[in-house]
Image (cartoon, rainbow, N blue to C red; front, side, top):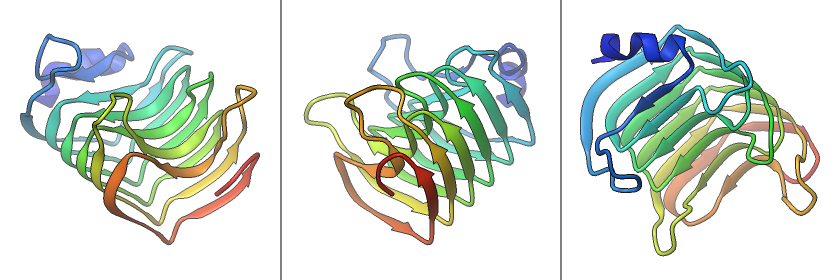
Length: 178
């Protein structure tokens, strides 16, 4: 399955979807690994945007120079984000790793820096929905600076999230909170 999307990765348009209807992702079990790639987003949107997928590992990816975020999971389950390097993420929504409406996600041993919002965020953008069992362990986050006046920025932010673990992370040099 990953080979099918190789050209999309090279063109900075990496996106897996399980349904053409926006917001209705269902479950798309691709059981794949995205690893050992370097993505310069060239000031475009999120380099890796996974939507409605299950059983995906993103490992040893360097993603940088993006205008929205580094890695985003939306309505995903049973995914692992490990040993990635994310930096130079700009804009009001400049998150390093964003987990939205997802379940059983592990974010571990990543290095995230020079971002304009939050290093690792677990939240939802839809009323009444939550993320569940999100784990953020042994990540390093630094140089997180605010892109907008009223936004709180920082290292790790879990909101609308039930269950999970935050442990052993290093957060330094942010303009707000850890």
